[in-house]
Image 1 (cartoon, rainbow, N blue to C red):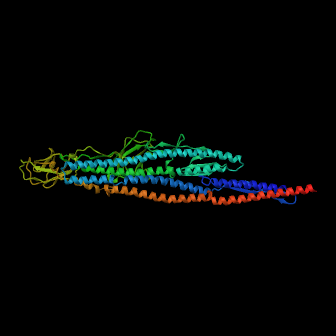
Image 2: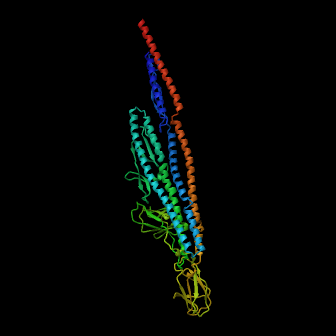
Image 3: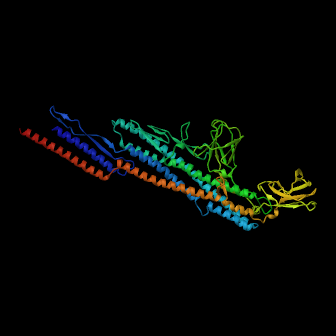
Length: 628
């Protein structure tokens, strides 16, 4: 009779536990990170009466979590990828809005500037049109500086968010480590039964961590979870954590990098490619830096082309035009790890060969190596003395670099921020083309005549200097009293970037003058040439105009933003499916739990009924014994 009581009581206890577990599932149906639980029931060891082996009821073997490591890994991976793309999308769309603005933006400012040159060409002596041109030049400078300032603000925002993400990662790592310690102790004290609620909390923290950075995990036999970031950098090893920190960039102190916080901390920014933190680093290197470089290339091309054309014309005083714009030189920054004080100076040597890339100049074995900073590919160069020439640049070192020295070369990154319109008077706008005046001395006795002068090299600094050609005899002449040149009638005479021809027979002492034609200031040829520069091929080996470069930059940034938006939409769908897969394993289905609850309730009632029957039989037995 005692068997009936024991079996019934074991069933009551087991089904009571099952009801409690099911109720707990229902209570936590909407609790983030909760994995549904189930009771594991096993038969109690049977008892033998010498003849028969009769079951002894049921036992609760444990409380199992519904969990799939594969679905958890899939979810964490999808969250890391989505976190990166969400961040990239945010910054790429902002830059698309900044650069793609048409009203009042760079494109409009440049159109207005070149149109102002056409107005000057229509009225080359008008002070009003010249002043309007200078106003448009200032608008262009303001647009460059404003756009660059907005890009710099995004970089500052990225620095702030990198710092915040690193702090969150450290906090999550410490919390996971603390839970590891509790789980190990609880598992040991519970005879191997894992504390499901603590594991749920830990998995939820790991899920949150995966949104910030890409992770991988391993599980030790004692129940501790090891977490790694990047390409295997340990963040949590059982109960120990490795803190991350931010450090100034090797070449730019205002550019924060992610590093381990050990005494010999390693910068790991390059290995963090997913999660929100990976998205921040990618947005800086793949979106903001290229935009700044492309903007700087246009600023460099505009400044150089406009100033060069100014130098090829004459202002209202008959003088060469002065520069309208100023732009900073390419930047060359020594690594903070360099062991000497050698510096590098960079100038633009060939505008057509100038790119939007940054470069690393290194001396790993004492010999120079030049690589693309973004992908590490080698870049061809030539060396002459202490000057290295490559990609439209001339790089001059101040001394002999030590082995291991590195320099970051940025041809255009700082150009837009340093672009400015110079303080130029309206009368100094060079609207007229340079022309030459030739004349023969009135006292000439020979029959020689001089033709019109032809400008060969307008950039020659001495082009406008007065020159006197005097014949010491009919077959020999001097230039400004120097030299002795053989005369051939009709042959070109070249000097200071121009050439003329003298025909006929000169007499001894005859002289001819060549001077700059200051009286040609009403000419508009240089203003027309300046207006046409908008469509003149200047960049990319002389195939891309400033107008095309601006359009290409706007189109390229817009296309990149669209590609990121498309990738983000696709990854969002992947993440949604990963959540569904994870919930199908670990999520609580209230309908299922309601059915389970009814099942356990009925089982509990049946066990209670068995106990009641056992009690009735026992009472009948007692009555029969007492009656006998």
